[in-house]
Length: 256
Image 1 (cartoon, rainbow, N blue to C red):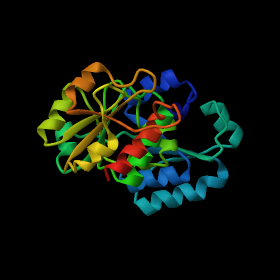
Image 2 (cartoon, one colour):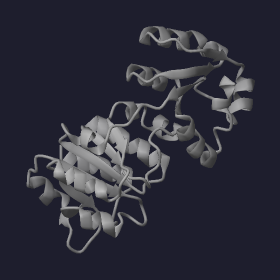
Image 3 (cartoon, rainbow, N blue to C red):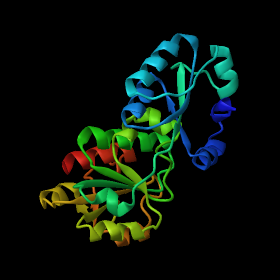
Image 4 (tube, helix red, strand yellow):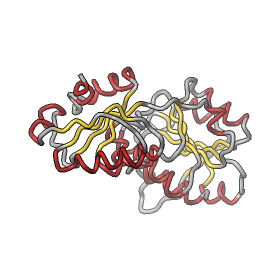
């Protein structure tokens, strides 16, 4: 039964539905598993090839956690998961309870808000930028991909466990809650009335929330209307915008 958590990991549509329903997520690779354990997350089990067994047991012992370690050959791992597990270890982890938006932003100064970003690679990269440059929290709109999906976790290098985050139930109503907490809300988008990121950063706002949308469609009109300002990154070379993960790094650096 424990192996059921690991079956069909390459079926993205199935896993996006199945994992939240079961209250679990996947951590892949020894480093990511160690970071999940260090963040206080609870493993249901760890699935490893023989050469990673001792590392898995050491990580559990260091965290003071007891969980089944399922040891299978590399061929059996591939048969169960549907792909070649190059990093040799997977852990089925319990999803932690998420705070409310108000609780999340209470002591924060820099917040990133993600709307409609469905690419798990971009979500993971944004979390890594937030951790590395210094955002305090991330809010995901209902339309945003799951930060705890295996690809997001992997790309983030485990920083999804480091940066506090939550899922907004109401959208764009959550931006009103952020404003009520004393934040200036900046919608990162292309618009005729947008101010440059340089100009916005120079204003020196004490608490800022940067709202970012999907590539292509960008932020919805509703999200832009709910913001205090529309902000754009000055560009050159006839290019109008950056990949959203790159844009998050630029914006956070400017507002640090």
